[in-house]
Structures are given as C-alpha cells and as structure tokens.
Image (cartoon, rainbow, N blue to C red; front, side, top):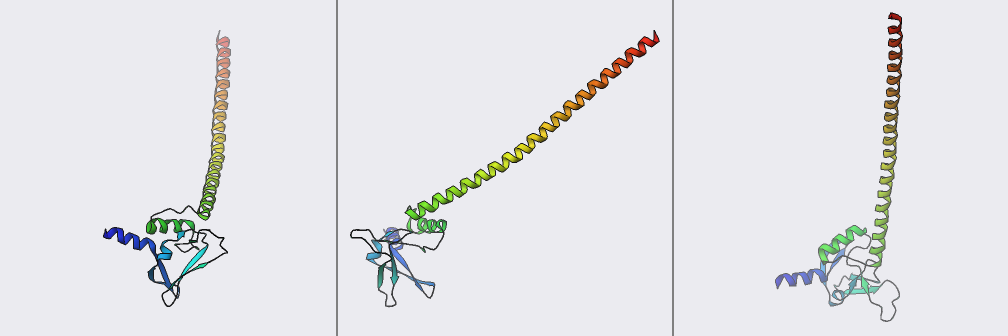
Length: 163
C-alpha cells in the first residue's frame, strides 16, 4: 500500500522550478488528471503563492482534451522517453515522438545503407584484387606451360642431335 501511494504521488507530482533550478514538487488534482503530450496544448506553472495554474498554449476547441508535457519539452526525444519511462512508467507515443522516432529510424536506415554501400565498395575492391590474383596465377601458369614446352622442344632437339 505504501509503495502504491508513493507511486501515485510520484506520477502525479509536478516539478517546481525557481530561478531555473528545481526547487520542489507539487501535487494538484487538476494536474493529476491532465494527460501528457510532448506537444502540449497547455502548460503548468506553480505561482509564487503556491497555486498551480494550467494555462493554454493555443486556442482549444470545445471538448478538446488538454495535454501538458510532464518533462522539459526542449529535451531530445531519447531523454524525454527515458524520464517518462523511469518516472511515470510509460513510453510516450504522441505525434511528436512518433514523427521524431520515424525520423530517427530513417536516419538509422540511411546510415545502415551508407555502411552497406561502403562494404560493397570495399568488397568490389577485394573482388578486383582477387580477380587480379587469379589472372596473375593464370599468367604464371601459362608462362610455366610455355617454358615446359620450350624445354620439351629443346630436349627433343638435343636428343635428335645425339642420334
């Protein structure tokens, strides 16, 4: 029960910053019922007198759900995802995270394709080197065969002269 209570407090508390530093955390029923998005439609401020204020960041349509960002929205996606997972127990799948994730996947795919092309290029060079070795070996074998023919021909000539 105590662990459950701590989890409830931890996942519903908001960070209070003063002069750019974390000063405390605050609990608010309103904040606790507000869902997260890394593209929030509202922000939470704890005023100097301790009151919690939820302020719209854009015009909200009637019935539109209000979202706040549980973490610093200027962070990179990986950092946001890590804190959300560790502190709140979920992986964000908002539009921003999904599009940034797709962008990250596209960049990873592009890097993999570049590596593949580099390997193919180095593979082509290796194949060219192998092909050159084969050709050198074939040329050496051909030269050896010619030398053997010449030796054979000259030995036949010398045998005829001896007779």
